[in-house]
Image (cartoon, rainbow over all chains, first blue to last red; front, side, top):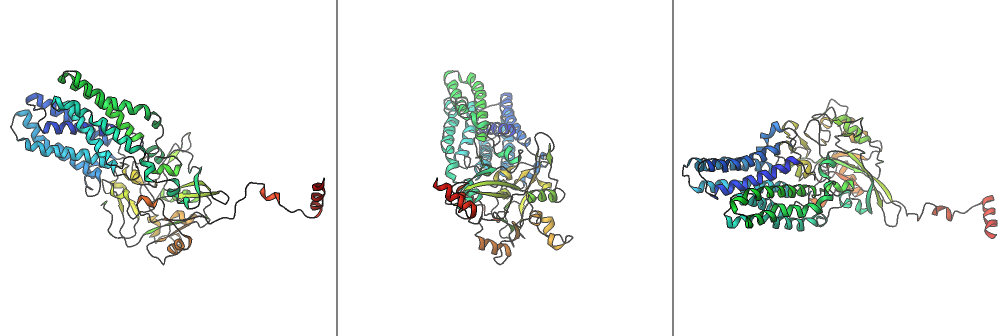
Length: 291
Length: 244
């Protein structure tokens, strides 16, 4: 699949943003006054800028409001609702922390639940795709959740927890690499089943249907980046998980948090780029190129 | 609404004969020609006369070579377009309701006025049936020429999809595949018509008729000449030279 920068930015920023907002909502750390304003503002800025980035890959973003209409069947539509619900439900909590209104933490709990639902809905957009066997697995929502928890945790979790949570995306990445690598073969689709010519013999591509490129090849048959996968995997693991965790252990935590978070974000971007670049779509079979 | 209809009255679709298709691309051209000026925005091209031409098409004809056990290898021309699936994943993923399946005839369509161009439906389709138009930013797909098949402004023989109407070898057939008595259903029955990638569970409506079995293969291109019995003068020379 084509690793579109807008979608990578969207999933990484909104994932980390909703993760951080959820921690703030639950009172980790307890913030007040202008420090509270800054913390909540940063969380909102990440989540909202991620959501805005997602509109850059739309062909007709002026109709984006229509995306709220199909929540009964579409995960993308559900994500639209849960993200707006989270941002709305957290507003009283944010105001309370900033202005010291003393609102009960229970309000934050509702908002945190909506944050979790948003991250899971984002993941389900990918995990539901039968056409991309690497994504269609329970490890996909686990990975998105792990990145959100780590993104928020590095910034906001209690010091003893922050380093441990920073390691979560590492474990999730290893899990998704292990489960994903054999997924296409295990799904059992082939040029033979895609064309039905397996009942005749062993098919292979004789000539492509068009000499130029097309939307399918640009969007779903991304072969350029796969070359770099072997190098990017360890880089993603180090930057997203190992280095932030190490920094949180060896440096004083208040100093380590921003540094660890910046490095974690870089790793998350690399990991998300791989998430798309390594994913193979079954339509590639028709072109003699796996996804 | 992107929930699928509980029941469709008919399932209109195509039956494509891989035995008679010669890969002439006439269906590709007719499709582009008709749909360029009919339903929805035109099918745009980018840099059509330049170094890197590209464009939107609703039908593509692949060409495969098949190694057959105990027979000569075969070339199979393979048209690929929307299969109007019963359980169409392109419909349920759509966040806006632009992508829908009609209850009256099972045709899967895109309401372009509601399409935001997110591309999710094209991701969900295993068959590569949907292409985003690069100029208009909306998703294009086969409409089964919905603006031809019910169009009483056209002569009756033209009320079928442009690809079917134009096919010079009669390799494309159109009809109601839910009716076992229809011509297309009988054709599928007689020729062992099959669905593409059935294991992915989308319930495609279109059927493909497999290439017929060809005769026994030859071991090499000159094999036929080895045992060719020569007669007359050539036969006399053959016998004479054989004795030398």
